[in-house]
Image: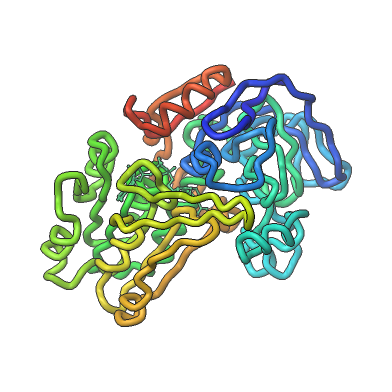
Length: 388
Ligand code: NAD
Ligand code: ZN
Protein backbone atom coordinates (compact mmCIF):
# COMPACT_ATOMS: atom_id res chain seq x y z
CA UNK A 1 0.00 0.00 0.00
CA UNK A 2 0.96 3.66 -0.16
CA UNK A 3 1.54 5.70 3.00
CA UNK A 4 2.88 9.10 4.07
CA UNK A 5 6.10 8.40 5.95
CA UNK A 6 8.38 10.50 8.16
CA UNK A 7 11.98 10.68 6.91
CA UNK A 8 13.36 13.46 9.11
CA UNK A 9 12.71 17.08 9.93
CA UNK A 10 10.63 18.66 7.14
CA UNK A 11 10.89 15.47 5.08
CA UNK A 12 7.67 13.51 4.46
CA UNK A 13 7.50 11.07 1.55
CA UNK A 14 4.94 8.76 0.00
CA UNK A 15 6.37 5.26 0.27
CA UNK A 16 5.17 1.84 -0.78
CA UNK A 17 5.05 -0.27 2.39
CA UNK A 18 3.64 -3.69 3.40
CA UNK A 19 -0.11 -3.84 4.06
CA UNK A 20 -1.01 -4.07 7.76
CA UNK A 21 -2.06 -7.44 9.17
CA UNK A 22 -4.08 -8.55 12.17
CA UNK A 23 -1.49 -8.99 14.96
CA UNK A 24 -3.83 -9.58 17.89
CA UNK A 25 -7.37 -11.01 18.11
CA UNK A 26 -8.70 -7.60 19.20
CA UNK A 27 -7.35 -5.83 16.07
CA UNK A 28 -9.29 -4.69 13.05
CA UNK A 29 -7.94 -3.55 9.68
CA UNK A 30 -9.44 -0.48 8.04
CA UNK A 31 -9.41 0.60 4.43
CA UNK A 32 -9.13 4.32 4.93
CA UNK A 33 -11.66 6.57 3.20
CA UNK A 34 -10.63 9.88 4.78
CA UNK A 35 -7.72 11.15 6.83
CA UNK A 36 -6.35 14.53 7.88
CA UNK A 37 -3.22 16.44 8.83
CA UNK A 38 -3.19 17.83 12.38
CA UNK A 39 -1.30 20.63 14.09
CA UNK A 40 0.17 17.85 16.22
CA UNK A 41 1.70 16.34 13.08
CA UNK A 42 3.62 19.60 12.67
CA UNK A 43 5.46 18.87 15.94
CA UNK A 44 6.74 15.66 14.30
CA UNK A 45 7.47 17.50 11.06
CA UNK A 46 9.40 20.18 12.98
CA UNK A 47 11.29 17.54 14.95
CA UNK A 48 9.98 18.47 18.42
CA UNK A 49 8.89 14.95 19.33
CA UNK A 50 11.82 12.63 19.84
CA UNK A 51 11.84 8.96 18.95
CA UNK A 52 10.52 9.10 15.39
CA UNK A 53 12.22 6.59 13.08
CA UNK A 54 12.76 6.88 9.35
CA UNK A 55 9.83 5.33 7.53
CA UNK A 56 7.28 5.72 10.36
CA UNK A 57 3.77 6.09 8.94
CA UNK A 58 2.15 9.38 9.98
CA UNK A 59 -1.44 10.32 10.73
CA UNK A 60 -3.89 9.95 13.62
CA UNK A 61 -7.16 11.43 12.33
CA UNK A 62 -8.85 8.90 10.08
CA UNK A 63 -11.90 6.80 9.31
CA UNK A 64 -12.74 4.03 6.93
CA UNK A 65 -14.33 0.73 6.11
CA UNK A 66 -13.57 -2.48 8.02
CA UNK A 67 -11.88 -5.06 5.80
CA UNK A 68 -10.63 -7.52 8.47
CA UNK A 69 -11.83 -8.30 11.98
CA UNK A 70 -9.86 -10.08 14.72
CA UNK A 71 -11.49 -13.12 16.33
CA UNK A 72 -12.18 -11.36 19.65
CA UNK A 73 -13.93 -8.34 18.12
CA UNK A 74 -17.63 -9.15 18.38
CA UNK A 75 -19.19 -5.68 18.08
CA UNK A 76 -18.00 -4.83 14.54
CA UNK A 77 -18.40 -6.52 11.18
CA UNK A 78 -16.78 -6.44 7.76
CA UNK A 79 -17.90 -3.55 5.60
CA UNK A 80 -18.94 -1.31 8.51
CA UNK A 81 -17.86 2.31 8.46
CA UNK A 82 -16.09 3.63 11.56
CA UNK A 83 -14.26 6.69 12.81
CA UNK A 84 -11.28 5.94 15.05
CA UNK A 85 -10.10 7.89 18.15
CA UNK A 86 -6.44 8.93 17.93
CA UNK A 87 -5.88 7.63 21.46
CA UNK A 88 -5.37 3.87 21.61
CA UNK A 89 -6.97 2.49 24.77
CA UNK A 90 -7.58 -1.00 26.12
CA UNK A 91 -10.90 -0.17 27.77
CA UNK A 92 -10.29 -2.20 30.93
CA UNK A 93 -7.33 -0.80 32.90
CA UNK A 94 -7.53 1.45 35.99
CA UNK A 95 -7.51 4.58 33.81
CA UNK A 96 -9.89 3.48 31.04
CA UNK A 97 -12.39 2.44 33.70
CA UNK A 98 -12.23 5.98 35.06
CA UNK A 99 -12.90 7.49 31.62
CA UNK A 100 -9.26 8.64 31.39
CA UNK A 101 -8.65 7.01 28.03
CA UNK A 102 -5.52 8.91 27.02
CA UNK A 103 -3.88 7.66 30.22
CA UNK A 104 -4.47 3.98 29.33
CA UNK A 105 -1.88 1.84 31.07
CA UNK A 106 -1.98 -1.06 28.61
CA UNK A 107 -1.78 0.39 25.11
CA UNK A 108 1.74 1.82 25.11
CA UNK A 109 4.47 -0.83 25.02
CA UNK A 110 7.07 1.94 25.41
CA UNK A 111 5.45 3.59 28.42
CA UNK A 112 8.61 3.25 30.53
CA UNK A 113 10.72 4.99 27.91
CA UNK A 114 8.08 7.74 27.64
CA UNK A 115 8.18 8.17 31.40
CA UNK A 116 11.95 8.55 31.35
CA UNK A 117 11.68 11.27 28.70
CA UNK A 118 8.43 13.09 29.52
CA UNK A 119 7.92 12.12 33.14
CA UNK A 120 4.61 10.53 32.16
CA UNK A 121 3.49 7.29 30.57
CA UNK A 122 0.72 8.16 28.13
CA UNK A 123 -1.49 5.84 26.09
CA UNK A 124 -0.39 4.70 22.67
CA UNK A 125 -1.23 7.00 19.76
CA UNK A 126 -1.44 6.34 16.04
CA UNK A 127 1.48 7.69 14.01
CA UNK A 128 3.04 9.60 16.88
CA UNK A 129 6.57 8.31 17.56
CA UNK A 130 7.87 5.28 19.42
CA UNK A 131 7.40 6.93 22.81
CA UNK A 132 3.67 6.70 22.11
CA UNK A 133 3.87 3.04 21.15
CA UNK A 134 5.30 3.18 17.63
CA UNK A 135 1.91 2.48 16.01
CA UNK A 136 1.59 3.01 12.25
CA UNK A 137 -0.66 5.96 11.41
CA UNK A 138 -3.55 6.57 9.09
CA UNK A 139 -2.20 8.84 6.37
CA UNK A 140 -2.18 5.60 4.41
CA UNK A 141 -4.44 3.36 2.39
CA UNK A 142 -4.89 0.85 5.24
CA UNK A 143 -4.28 0.84 8.97
CA UNK A 144 -4.28 -1.68 11.81
CA UNK A 145 -6.49 -0.56 14.70
CA UNK A 146 -5.57 -2.22 18.02
CA UNK A 147 -8.37 -2.72 20.61
CA UNK A 148 -10.82 -2.47 17.71
CA UNK A 149 -13.57 -3.70 20.04
CA UNK A 150 -13.25 -0.56 22.21
CA UNK A 151 -12.31 2.58 20.28
CA UNK A 152 -13.95 2.79 16.84
CA UNK A 153 -17.36 4.44 16.53
CA UNK A 154 -19.83 3.16 13.94
CA UNK A 155 -21.00 5.97 11.68
CA UNK A 156 -24.73 6.14 11.04
CA UNK A 157 -25.73 6.16 7.38
CA UNK A 158 -26.43 9.51 5.78
CA UNK A 159 -23.43 11.36 7.20
CA UNK A 160 -20.52 12.30 4.96
CA UNK A 161 -16.90 11.59 5.89
CA UNK A 162 -16.13 15.30 6.30
CA UNK A 163 -18.97 15.60 8.86
CA UNK A 164 -17.77 12.80 11.17
CA UNK A 165 -14.01 12.47 10.49
CA UNK A 166 -13.09 15.09 13.08
CA UNK A 167 -14.58 13.04 15.90
CA UNK A 168 -11.21 11.27 15.70
CA UNK A 169 -9.44 14.21 17.36
CA UNK A 170 -9.99 17.92 16.89
CA UNK A 171 -13.71 18.13 17.73
CA UNK A 172 -13.31 16.20 21.02
CA UNK A 173 -10.08 18.09 21.70
CA UNK A 174 -11.69 21.51 21.27
CA UNK A 175 -14.72 20.34 23.22
CA UNK A 176 -12.72 18.96 26.14
CA UNK A 177 -10.69 22.19 26.24
CA UNK A 178 -13.93 24.17 26.59
CA UNK A 179 -15.52 21.73 29.01
CA UNK A 180 -12.39 21.98 31.18
CA UNK A 181 -13.16 25.70 31.57
CA UNK A 182 -16.29 24.92 33.59
CA UNK A 183 -18.10 27.70 31.74
CA UNK A 184 -20.74 29.73 33.57
CA UNK A 185 -23.42 31.73 31.76
CA UNK A 186 -21.78 35.13 32.09
CA UNK A 187 -18.29 33.89 31.36
CA UNK A 188 -15.75 35.24 28.93
CA UNK A 189 -13.44 32.66 27.37
CA UNK A 190 -10.31 33.72 25.49
CA UNK A 191 -8.83 31.26 22.98
CA UNK A 192 -5.22 31.57 21.81
CA UNK A 193 -4.78 29.89 18.42
CA UNK A 194 -7.50 29.75 15.76
CA UNK A 195 -6.27 26.58 14.12
CA UNK A 196 -8.60 23.59 13.92
CA UNK A 197 -8.35 22.91 17.66
CA UNK A 198 -9.01 26.55 18.52
CA UNK A 199 -11.96 26.66 16.11
CA UNK A 200 -13.61 23.68 17.79
CA UNK A 201 -12.81 25.11 21.23
CA UNK A 202 -14.49 28.39 20.22
CA UNK A 203 -17.63 26.67 18.94
CA UNK A 204 -17.73 24.34 21.93
CA UNK A 205 -17.39 27.26 24.38
CA UNK A 206 -20.36 28.91 22.67
CA UNK A 207 -22.37 25.65 22.75
CA UNK A 208 -21.52 25.34 26.46
CA UNK A 209 -22.98 28.78 27.12
CA UNK A 210 -20.10 31.26 27.20
CA UNK A 211 -21.35 34.83 27.01
CA UNK A 212 -18.30 36.13 25.17
CA UNK A 213 -15.53 34.29 23.33
CA UNK A 214 -12.38 36.10 22.25
CA UNK A 215 -10.26 34.51 19.51
CA UNK A 216 -6.56 35.36 19.16
CA UNK A 217 -4.38 34.58 16.14
CA UNK A 218 -2.54 36.41 13.39
CA UNK A 219 -3.94 34.76 10.25
CA UNK A 220 -6.91 36.76 8.86
CA UNK A 221 -8.70 33.72 7.38
CA UNK A 222 -8.55 31.91 10.71
CA UNK A 223 -9.77 35.00 12.59
CA UNK A 224 -12.59 35.33 10.06
CA UNK A 225 -13.70 31.74 10.67
CA UNK A 226 -13.72 32.50 14.41
CA UNK A 227 -15.81 35.61 13.79
CA UNK A 228 -18.30 33.53 11.78
CA UNK A 229 -18.76 31.34 14.87
CA UNK A 230 -19.61 34.39 16.98
CA UNK A 231 -16.22 35.10 18.56
CA UNK A 232 -14.53 38.50 18.82
CA UNK A 233 -11.32 38.24 16.74
CA UNK A 234 -8.07 39.80 17.95
CA UNK A 235 -5.02 39.88 15.68
CA UNK A 236 -2.01 39.61 17.97
CA UNK A 237 0.28 40.94 15.26
CA UNK A 238 -1.28 44.39 15.49
CA UNK A 239 -3.06 44.57 18.83
CA UNK A 240 -1.98 44.60 22.46
CA UNK A 241 -3.73 41.36 23.41
CA UNK A 242 -3.55 41.98 27.14
CA UNK A 243 -5.08 45.45 26.80
CA UNK A 244 -7.89 44.22 24.55
CA UNK A 245 -8.72 41.43 26.97
CA UNK A 246 -8.83 43.85 29.90
CA UNK A 247 -11.10 46.23 28.01
CA UNK A 248 -13.52 43.41 27.17
CA UNK A 249 -13.67 42.10 30.74
CA UNK A 250 -14.05 45.23 32.91
CA UNK A 251 -10.34 45.11 33.67
CA UNK A 252 -10.53 41.68 35.35
CA UNK A 253 -9.33 39.37 32.57
CA UNK A 254 -11.12 36.40 31.03
CA UNK A 255 -12.75 33.83 33.31
CA UNK A 256 -11.04 31.12 31.33
CA UNK A 257 -8.11 31.08 28.91
CA UNK A 258 -7.53 28.30 26.41
CA UNK A 259 -4.07 27.73 24.92
CA UNK A 260 -4.82 26.02 21.61
CA UNK A 261 -1.32 26.79 20.33
CA UNK A 262 1.16 24.50 22.10
CA UNK A 263 4.70 24.22 20.79
CA UNK A 264 4.27 26.69 17.97
CA UNK A 265 7.45 27.55 16.14
CA UNK A 266 5.89 29.89 13.65
CA UNK A 267 4.03 32.54 15.60
CA UNK A 268 5.99 34.65 18.01
CA UNK A 269 6.84 31.13 18.93
CA UNK A 270 9.45 29.37 20.90
CA UNK A 271 13.03 28.37 20.41
CA UNK A 272 13.18 24.63 20.55
CA UNK A 273 16.38 23.09 21.71
CA UNK A 274 16.62 19.39 21.19
CA UNK A 275 18.98 18.05 23.81
CA UNK A 276 20.11 14.83 22.19
CA UNK A 277 22.01 13.59 25.22
CA UNK A 278 18.99 13.66 27.49
CA UNK A 279 16.43 13.25 24.74
CA UNK A 280 14.51 16.14 26.23
CA UNK A 281 12.74 18.70 24.15
CA UNK A 282 13.33 21.92 26.00
CA UNK A 283 11.51 25.05 24.98
CA UNK A 284 12.79 28.36 26.12
CA UNK A 285 12.04 31.88 25.13
CA UNK A 286 11.83 35.42 26.42
CA UNK A 287 9.28 36.35 23.78
CA UNK A 288 5.59 36.33 24.62
CA UNK A 289 4.09 32.93 24.14
CA UNK A 290 0.45 32.00 24.09
CA UNK A 291 0.70 30.06 27.33
CA UNK A 292 2.47 32.81 29.23
CA UNK A 293 0.00 35.38 27.91
CA UNK A 294 -2.91 33.15 28.90
CA UNK A 295 -1.63 32.77 32.47
CA UNK A 296 -0.95 36.49 32.84
CA UNK A 297 -4.31 37.52 31.35
CA UNK A 298 -6.57 35.12 33.22
CA UNK A 299 -8.64 36.65 36.01
CA UNK A 300 -8.03 35.71 39.66
CA UNK A 301 -9.55 32.31 40.39
CA UNK A 302 -9.92 31.57 36.68
CA UNK A 303 -9.04 28.52 34.64
CA UNK A 304 -6.26 27.97 32.13
CA UNK A 305 -7.13 25.09 29.81
CA UNK A 306 -4.31 23.74 27.65
CA UNK A 307 -5.18 21.50 24.70
CA UNK A 308 -2.04 22.70 22.89
CA UNK A 309 0.65 20.03 22.99
CA UNK A 310 3.85 20.44 25.00
CA UNK A 311 6.58 17.83 25.22
CA UNK A 312 9.44 17.67 27.67
CA UNK A 313 10.29 20.84 29.57
CA UNK A 314 9.12 24.37 29.14
CA UNK A 315 10.96 27.08 31.01
CA UNK A 316 9.94 30.46 32.36
CA UNK A 317 6.36 29.60 33.22
CA UNK A 318 5.04 32.44 35.42
CA UNK A 319 4.18 30.05 38.19
CA UNK A 320 4.20 32.88 40.75
CA UNK A 321 1.40 34.66 38.90
CA UNK A 322 -0.56 31.42 38.62
CA UNK A 323 -0.16 30.80 42.34
CA UNK A 324 -0.93 34.39 43.26
CA UNK A 325 -4.15 34.34 41.25
CA UNK A 326 -5.19 30.91 42.44
CA UNK A 327 -5.59 29.61 38.90
CA UNK A 328 -6.87 26.18 37.97
CA UNK A 329 -4.94 24.40 35.24
CA UNK A 330 -6.49 21.66 33.08
CA UNK A 331 -4.58 20.07 30.24
CA UNK A 332 -3.56 16.96 28.43
CA UNK A 333 -4.18 14.58 25.61
CA UNK A 334 -7.90 14.28 24.89
CA UNK A 335 -9.90 11.37 26.29
CA UNK A 336 -11.44 10.97 22.84
CA UNK A 337 -13.51 7.85 23.59
CA UNK A 338 -15.39 9.80 26.30
CA UNK A 339 -16.73 12.25 23.72
CA UNK A 340 -17.53 10.09 20.67
CA UNK A 341 -21.22 9.41 21.36
CA UNK A 342 -22.16 12.80 22.84
CA UNK A 343 -20.46 14.73 20.05
CA UNK A 344 -21.93 12.48 17.35
CA UNK A 345 -25.30 13.44 18.87
CA UNK A 346 -24.44 17.13 18.48
CA UNK A 347 -23.69 16.47 14.80
CA UNK A 348 -26.79 14.38 14.05
CA UNK A 349 -29.06 16.81 15.91
CA UNK A 350 -27.77 19.63 13.73
CA UNK A 351 -26.03 21.65 16.48
CA UNK A 352 -22.73 21.62 14.61
CA UNK A 353 -21.43 20.53 11.21
CA UNK A 354 -17.67 19.91 11.59
CA UNK A 355 -17.08 20.05 7.83
CA UNK A 356 -16.78 23.84 8.18
CA UNK A 357 -13.11 23.31 9.12
CA UNK A 358 -11.94 21.77 5.82
CA UNK A 359 -10.09 24.32 3.71
CA UNK A 360 -8.20 21.96 1.40
CA UNK A 361 -9.03 18.50 0.01
CA UNK A 362 -6.14 16.48 -1.38
CA UNK A 363 -5.07 13.01 -2.44
CA UNK A 364 -2.40 10.99 -0.62
CA UNK A 365 0.26 11.94 -3.19
CA UNK A 366 -0.14 15.60 -2.29
CA UNK A 367 0.52 15.06 1.44
CA UNK A 368 4.27 15.94 1.48
CA UNK A 369 3.56 19.31 -0.16
CA UNK A 370 0.60 19.86 2.17
CA UNK A 371 2.78 19.45 5.27
CA UNK A 372 5.02 22.27 4.09
CA UNK A 373 2.08 24.50 3.18
CA UNK A 374 0.32 23.79 6.48
CA UNK A 375 3.53 24.60 8.37
CA UNK A 376 3.89 28.07 6.87
CA UNK A 377 0.12 28.56 6.46
CA UNK A 378 0.92 30.97 3.62
CA UNK A 379 -1.65 29.35 1.33
CA UNK A 380 -4.43 30.04 3.86
CA UNK A 381 -4.71 26.37 4.70
CA UNK A 382 -6.69 25.67 7.86
CA UNK A 383 -7.37 21.94 7.60
CA UNK A 384 -6.21 19.43 5.03
CA UNK A 385 -8.54 16.50 4.45
CA UNK A 386 -7.07 13.57 2.55
CA UNK A 387 -9.51 11.53 0.49
CA UNK A 388 -8.90 8.16 -1.14
P1 NAD B 1 -2.40 24.87 13.92
O1 NAD B 1 -0.94 24.89 13.74
O2 NAD B 1 -3.25 24.81 12.70
O3 NAD B 1 -2.88 26.12 14.76
C1 NAD B 1 -2.10 26.80 15.69
C2 NAD B 1 -2.51 28.26 15.62
O4 NAD B 1 -1.88 28.99 16.69
C3 NAD B 1 -2.09 28.95 14.33
O5 NAD B 1 -3.23 29.50 13.69
C4 NAD B 1 -1.09 30.01 14.79
O6 NAD B 1 -1.13 31.18 13.99
C5 NAD B 1 -1.58 30.29 16.21
N1 NAD B 1 -0.58 30.91 17.09
C6 NAD B 1 0.76 30.74 17.12
N2 NAD B 1 1.34 31.49 18.06
C7 NAD B 1 0.33 32.18 18.65
C8 NAD B 1 0.27 33.15 19.71
N3 NAD B 1 1.38 33.52 20.35
N4 NAD B 1 -0.95 33.64 20.04
C9 NAD B 1 -2.09 33.24 19.41
N5 NAD B 1 -2.08 32.33 18.40
C10 NAD B 1 -0.90 31.82 18.03
O7 NAD B 1 -2.70 23.61 14.88
P2 NAD B 1 -4.03 22.89 15.43
O8 NAD B 1 -4.31 21.70 14.60
O9 NAD B 1 -5.12 23.86 15.67
O10 NAD B 1 -3.47 22.38 16.83
C11 NAD B 1 -3.22 23.33 17.87
C12 NAD B 1 -2.50 22.67 19.03
O11 NAD B 1 -3.35 21.64 19.59
C13 NAD B 1 -1.20 21.96 18.64
O12 NAD B 1 -0.24 22.15 19.66
C14 NAD B 1 -1.60 20.51 18.60
O13 NAD B 1 -0.51 19.65 18.82
C15 NAD B 1 -2.57 20.46 19.74
N6 NAD B 1 -3.47 19.29 19.77
C16 NAD B 1 -3.68 18.73 20.98
C17 NAD B 1 -4.50 17.64 21.12
C18 NAD B 1 -4.75 17.07 22.47
O14 NAD B 1 -5.15 15.91 22.59
N7 NAD B 1 -4.57 17.83 23.53
C19 NAD B 1 -5.10 17.10 19.98
C20 NAD B 1 -4.90 17.72 18.74
C21 NAD B 1 -4.07 18.81 18.65
ZN1 ZN C 1 -4.63 15.53 15.74
